[in-house]
Amino acid sequence: MTDLDRIMVIAQLASALEASGTPKPGNVHRNADYPQTRFEHFLAGSIALGPAVSSASLQGLKAVLGEIRFSEIGIGRIIRRAVLDVKSFQRGGNTHLGVAMLLIPLAAAAGAASTSDDDVSVKLLRRYLKRIVKATGVDDAIEIQKTIFSFDSKWLGKLKSKSTPDLSEDNASNAINLGGTTFYDLMVSSSKWDGVAQELSSGLKTAFTVGYPEFKSIYEKTGDVNVATVNTFLKILSNTPDTFIARKIGLEKTSNIVEAAKRGMEESKKVSRRAKGILDNYRGMMTEEGRIEISRFDAELRSKGGSMNPGTTADITAASIMIALLSGLRF
Image 1 (tube, rainbow, N blue to C red):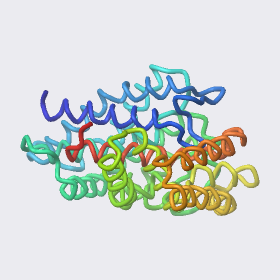
Image 2 (cartoon, rainbow, N blue to C red; image 1 turned 135 degrees about the vertical axis):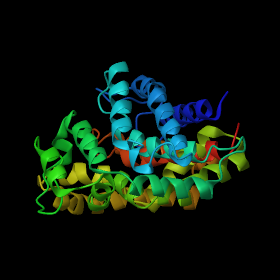
Image 3 (cartoon, helix red, strand yellow; image 1 turned 120 degrees about the horizontal axis):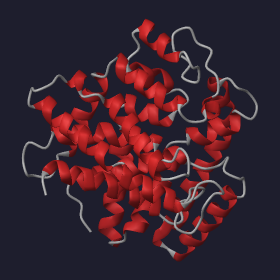
């Protein structure tokens, strides 16, 4: 297996393991579905990501070898390809946009770092990740806008800003082009209300400094991938309130995305405090009491009909697992 094949398999496995984590409170998992989105939709999407991941890793390798510039990797185009591939293999809707936005740049960084047979250095991986995201251009931003607009964009709300294009508008591509807005620019400006954007504009700070160490530590202690996955999910959630929850709650009261995120953040923080309590008091999935509390937590969030689904936390968990696997963790 070549290094680039290995990166593709790792990304598919990371996404599938995240989806399989049971019970991740509020998420679809092996024992719980939502009416329009089921566990198998996430499994199908995890496998369908493969070709786009392979393309991203090859582009990253070409960049580090000097065959193309880092700005020519085409992160936006490859993310769009990944999302369309996922969409063509399942009918569960927008299951992997956030995962693709995190794993595609990560795959490109892994490709850039794959100049030897050794496992990827986490420090080097993050260095390339930051460089790749910052090198993105206007074309990458336009591709992301087209990708987002291809789904039901009601969850985006409306953005009233002279400096940042409203991605929910059909003519946003024109505004992006006229303003010279890059993918990185979009991530920085969107980080106020979107956790995936926060991750990308910060070099996947939460995934590298919270999620990856937690996953590695818990797996080494327990030898149980599911325990490591769910505890990592809870650790990320306890550390960073989920913006997907905040937006969903806030958008019930206002269409302004910035205001919506603010209005929904207190409820999201309550969810984070609940996750922290389960880890601090019961050690999460590592104890019988913790597993009982997690199941209760899952039922509580699920009873809200999807508005309390920590989707961004799940995306960051997938990235955290991918980093662990790239660095050599095996089970």
